[in-house]
Length: 107
Length: 231
Image 1 (cartoon, rainbow over the protein chains, first blue to last red):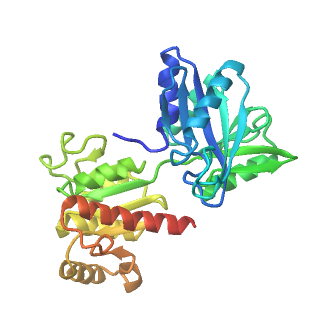
Image 2 (image 1 turned 30 degrees about the horizontal axis):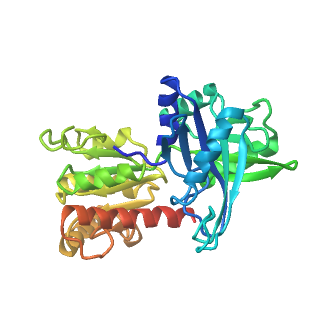
């Protein structure tokens, strides 16, 4: 059965027990209309898998790229994504909001 | 996040203890703040106060204390839905409530109805409502929905729900059934203001016909009441 916000943390534990590297991304602040509330989480492993979400699919790809670097350096990162021009190929939120995401390695 | 912190977060969440995970956004250092535990190293009185406020509002947020941003992630026990009557409509309702992240308890003394096969993942209580409700928390994060439309199951559950601060009370049944139900409850001593707390016929009026559609209308009404109360 699906469990809402729980699964990123539970999944992190499962992956750690399998001996994989795990990075957690957490929405820590939002402005305007943002798709996911503060506290929403996504966890990623070293094989490019992810569970959970931090937006409506708009910035997950970029966060996964950042997660690879956090996995290597071990240093947490604080990312901010804002409004994008819908016609441009940049990463951001088409909904007009802004979101701050904390990315950390589980050690 | 340290692995030890992850283990503590998962254990406390499993035990349904309320707490806040505070994270310094510059260094990543973390603390667990619990309402029943004072004097944690590294947690100032101001930080503790902010964490307890976030917990009460059920809202995770970033706060700035002494020019340092800290994220306060709220872990409250899940919203609980108590269903009375393991009838057909209870099946899609259980699925949707679990998908929304709620804890579901289903009360029905009839062994043939309340089975694990029909209700996977649901906390089943094969008991009469009056007895089952004694062992359940009926608080502001709880909803009670009666589905049996049989007075001998539904009425005792509604009476106990009306004497509690639960955020939502719903009762399945037609307008006629509901009018009779209200007459019985009035006879039992409940005032009109009490009866107004009962959503009956249950659910938003969206013309729902099938059990799945009725479940959608009940869930929509229930979420509306929950979030209105927290707004």
